[in-house]
Image (cartoon, rainbow, N blue to C red; front, top):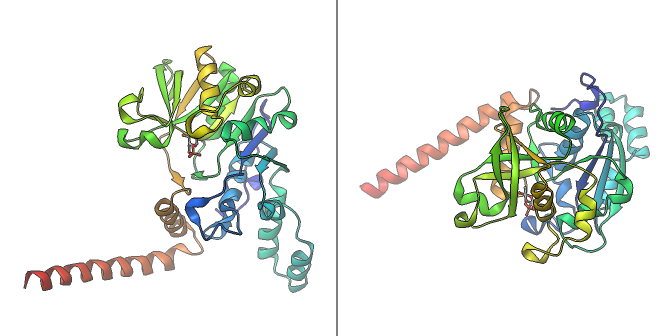
Length: 316
Ligand code: G1P
């Protein structure tokens, strides 16, 4: 988990090189922590959530990352920049481990920033990337969804894009009661395991109106034609320009595929899931895990014991 992905085995050259990371949201679910700190900078163990996302892009061979930020997001820029004084101080102490940790974020990819000046929705944030992306397919990674670093979802999506052209979305089967939290896809089989054709998309439908229980999770590989569609996509759900609505038009043209993901995904945009993510990833860290797991077991045993004696007291 600690090693930067850029240090892992080289990935084959891709036709898709650019990733767009929308990071302009206000993070209201995490107030007051996000009053002066971008939600993307909240630590997951000891790295900000957004670093995992950039590492994922780099691991899939994407070497150009555009962050679409907003006001009060300068900490994201600083995180992916050099930190001269800090680096000098660590170098002077000979602390090469921390020095690498400080330098790694800026080495992951060629990182750019642009501001979404008006909060008009995810579709609008993606549209802000138009000039930077140009006429090439590109990936979009949403920061609230962390995909476990051991998974290869994005690479699979890029392979599907190489074979089928068009656009590719990541899909995950969810309990029907949860579908109202996601974009939802109507799908048809392709005959290929784990790959479906997307015939329609709807943003956050009620369970009665959902065409399936396939939820769009925050990974997309998009054809550049999506920009023209986004230009004329009217505000949709929540009064925002929805990426899902633009993809619905592309799905109508038969150019959208879905890659079904059954692996480990963490929703760090939700408080309880954020806590679960930190605990899980901490347990798996070789440097922290053994001690932390031992403490956690004791802690849970204590809870169980307190519950049991509470029940007994109540029954007495
Ligand atoms: C966004 C998208 C939604 C998608 C979700 C994945 O919603 O609009 O289609 O399913 O991300 O996390 P948000 O969670 O930003 O409201």
